[in-house]
Length: 285
Image (cartoon, rainbow, N blue to C red; front, side, top):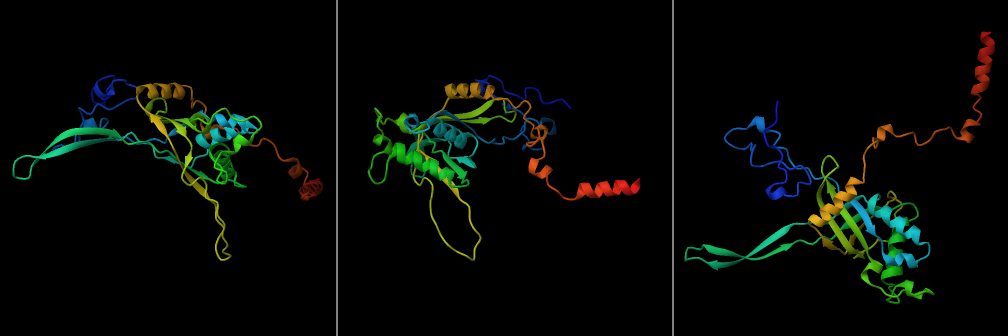
């Protein structure tokens, strides 16, 4: 069956940039007097995809810490590969009106007074790893670059080579958040957030004892400050990043086995099997 003509709205009206396929909602409504089965393709629903987070800039202050490459690469992994969840991104508009009575029947006339956009407050959730590596990194970021709770200044200023400034790019990171389309080739929505550093509770470190209960793991939900840019310029940048990400050959079922040989200690282990095989072979002869 052929699809409804003009199913996709390309480079027109509210899809002026045509970056991703968008259904033309002028046609194909199925909630009229009777369902229009011929237009089922145009009735396809939007299903939100998981966000892709890309670290664009690490805090400049990491370069003044010992082993800066470790700090940067750890942050890149925590931003891009390790999060359990990422929440708090929004581009929701709110329209406000003023109201004045219109006659005596209770009607009011509403006139536009303001439009605002909900700000994004990114929140990452990480599962703690063996040895409390996540908490150690996050607390190190805070104590070294943001502030020590005892002295009220960051520990980096104690270095022999003291930083020239503590401006926002010294303490914060920049992250690009991308929502791809179902084909993973086009950008639907993007956020470019900078001045990002932990705020509120960073990583809860606590202890307890209950010999009657099972032992517990730990998840950290960390909110970040953010100054966020959105719009076609950000979407265009996100599209460039997405174009450089390929899923070709990414089928996990086709990956090579993560081990390619039997461990030497296992190979050398004596189970008596070889002797039994030899005896059976002799008996057969």
